[in-house]
Amino acid sequence: MSIPKQLKPRLICKSSSEYFPVETYRFQGSDGGLLDIEYEAIFPKDKIVKRPPGMWRYREALPFPVEAEPVSFGEGFTPMPRVNVHGHGIFLKQEQLFPSGSYKDRGATLLVSHAKRIGVQHCVEDSSGNAGSAIAAYCARAGITCDIYLPASTSPAKIAQISAYGARLRLIPGSREATADAVMNAATSSYYASHVWNPFFFHGTKTFAYEIWEQLGFRAPDAVVLPVGNGTLLIGTAIGFEELLKAGEIEKLPKIFGVQAELCAPLLGSEPSKTDRIEVTPSQQTIAEGIAVARPPRGQQILEVLRRCNGRVLCVGENEIIASLRHMCRQGFFIEPTSAATLAAIPKVFRDKAWQSEYREPIVVSLCSGHGLKASEKVAEISQTRPV
Image (cartoon, rainbow, N blue to C red):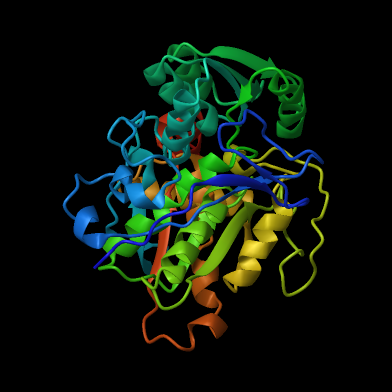
């Protein structure tokens, strides 16, 4: 079987439809619009299955030259056991087992590989912790210096991890949004290795979908349950499954459920079946710090993804997150509270009988998004207190 010739990747502004070469250092269009990558993924399964397990086995589906050497720790192809989560059997991707302790390494390995290839020597990034850890780790491996902007309230373990990689810390008082605002000045003079603005990050996280497809015997699940703050995994997963659908590798897209914390839920009430408007909500402190994003820059894109995937948003409260964390730890999964928030929504997914009507036993996939060592003090506090 001959492999079709691929188009060279190029950046496109979502608002103006303006094109840019991928070698540019810009992170937004001339009008300030968000950038995406125009690229056609292909899946030569005969080659894929012969390669070592890892996300770089899908080389022809990534916007990075096949012959180029990536910045890599051998990441990817995380285990996906079938697990009982709050009384329901699902497949659970162990994304906390990545080198820096979260799925954000998927985006970081591709973004930093691209940055190194185009000659970047210094970059900046803003994060609630995990993306900053991932970018700092891969920049250390690539020999690229970086400044990581974080909310001053970030978990001490994440701050220590980022500092240990040699990154320069910029701790910003206030909310996650204040941190995002603070990095913008630096981004005008340094390469912005953003997990939100830089589209190469999403084309790394899309490998989450590829691995699920392969681990299920080259088929799509019926539903995927994902955290949604800035939408880096949700958007990436949708891109991955849509590329598999376009290539004829799956028959239909899975339903995507995005999970938010009730204390920071800008997408609640903005599901595609209701309205296209993102609610501007005050960001209150939640133990699920990884999804505490009150103004997601790609909020409209998240809604577009949910519409195409017939998806919806679910919210969970602090007590549900705490109970979920205890439940998972007692099963041997040492995860951070943000991971527990995603899994707290599993009962709500199965209570929604309407979407399950066409399946005898729906195949549902979710994930442990970050390791418990990322927030060990908080996890210890929760596990030692009396159940709520």
